[in-house]
Image (cartoon, rainbow, N blue to C red):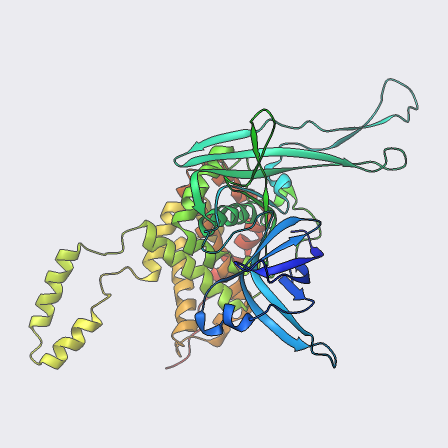
Length: 474
């Protein structure tokens, strides 16, 4: 997202008479910040700390452009030098550039448009070509060529999904010339939708491109539309005015200095099924939101290897709980079996202990969950680990060593190298299961075996599985 550093006038929502000059800043590292050259009158009464309200500040910047700062809180209040002039500073959770939302007016929208890092590289619909006129020997006539594709759309249950394309030129056309292009995903809703739900679309696209390119990406721009924020022309037609959204990314990733190599991508836009495949992903991502939040946490933010390993397994277990049966036998049969077991216990206190001990006895163990997911994801996953049953056992043992501090297993079993390759293999398992849920063609899933990182992980995982598990005497 582009940086902002502008001056303007600002006031607490509902109090336009309380305008104060200030400076509004935004960058991805620090988020949305407002420094007032003065202070709001009676601020303590309007923004009382004990009220726990989500406060708004409105403003005018850049010669009259509207801004709304949402969920503001004061970060500093100080006297300027030796004077009696008080200055205040605020932070906001996010910024809406292009609209004012008044007191109690919900931030709702009918459309969101999202661009991410390297989206064009993942979509692979167009490229800029440089051509030299071959008809003239020694010709120095150079031409930049770009074919802009047509917009692609897909009807959803409650709206429309589309992929659009744009281009622009920069330079004075005499000494310099730059041609650039890109693409954007847009989600149109049939009715006004709360901001929180609208933003899920942006995160879904971000997650999809991150997995597909195998490079962590951030949203580079987000634009929203509101039915009342529009311009009416003389002929009566209306065009909706975009509202730009700014917020500090939840992920503290370092952007890759180079675009992703197409040969190293897990899958491309076409391979997942084009616009229809993206539509399927939106539905799957909504169902497995908790899975993806855990699975991609280490892609977006650095973390210790133990946390990465456990996050991958937590994502796998959560996927299994959502997708597969969470019972080893029908609930009625298990209850009957448990009653019979408990009936043989003579003492009441012992019966209660046995009941609690058997509370989760009807749920699959982690190893069983992993084996069922492998069967769902195959055939590619077996080529990654060689022996799925041995892999599931090793992963389960490693998890137990970390979580339960099992003294029978060697500390060497949990060294970073081992955990890295087992964590990456679990990551691929969940990704393959998610692609299966999306109905991705078998050809796409099978071609993942040719991915360079997939092959690298496969080589080392098989090597780890060939090593016997070392045990201590208990």
